[in-house]
Amino acid sequence: MKKIFLTAALSLTLVSALAHADDKTLDISYVKSPFNLQTIVMKEHNLLEKQVAPLGLQVKWHEITSGAKQAQALASGDLDIGGVMNTSSVLMANGEGNPVEIIAGVSRPTDTFAIVAAKNGAKSIADLKGKKVAGPKGTVLHQTLVAALVKNGLSMNDVQFIQMDLPQAFAALQSGEVDAALLAASMVIKAEQEGDKVLATADGLVVPKLVMASSAQVVKNHPDWIKATIAAHDEAGAWIKNNTVEAIALGAKVQGISVADAQKLYDWSHFTQRLNQGDIASMKDDIQFMIQNDMMRNDVDVNKIILPQAMEQ
Image 1 (cartoon, one colour):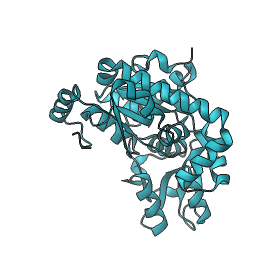
Image 2 (tube, helix red, strand yellow):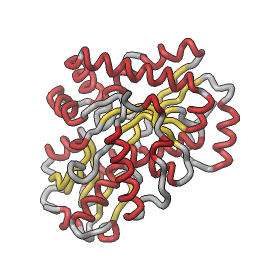
Image 3 (spheres, one colour):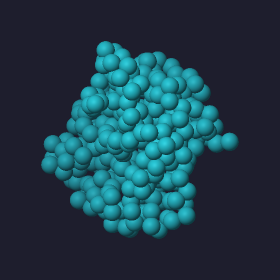
Image 4 (cartoon, helix red, strand yellow):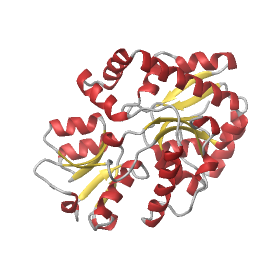
């Protein structure tokens, strides 16, 4: 039985890879935030379970929200599918020799990622100089922070950055442990309701691109798993399109938010099932920005890490 050990150590990778040949479980991450409606529908309606049943597979969902941690779990073999990952994490993983491949598009949620300051605190990005900022490292939120600082003549050296997952960053902001937090979706809405201030969103700084991904090894050895996963993803997308009101209500229930807030997140999400040439160009720009700002060390050939079926035809 596989266990979730989030490490990219080579020995564990090899052990997991060898054990995977006889594994009858498809392990996929369950990422609800920012408002990943396709994934929610897939899970709640058992769409993936139905697609892989003819292959003799069971499905196991793992709540791993960080793109960086999903990349590590894909490397170790503890995950077969990264249910939703930001392309920043995918690019960083590949830059460090962890071959993660994009199998489908999810969304371009520019408005859902934000840098939020505590109430009565910083009123601008420039005010963050010397302040504590919490958030998930190696993600599109991390990239958004770097871009916002650079735009204001600052760098990461000018803030005290503390690695935290989203729930911990939100809690730290509310308790006053940090001066600002990198938040997404419903947490941004809740923070504003608490009186906190949004200093910047990704809009105009970064183009967030959320995708579904897998390891190069699973893509190569189990193309039927990939085909079934994409089919379930597309089935979810079609159901959302044909049952939008019901889908938004389902998302609200799962996220524990109001239907009005869920509608707002739906409008912010800009869902897609496939990537386009604009996304490829954007990823190339992201690579150069991240290399220049010490978020990545090595270049990546974007075209080699995107499956043909992940692109618009």
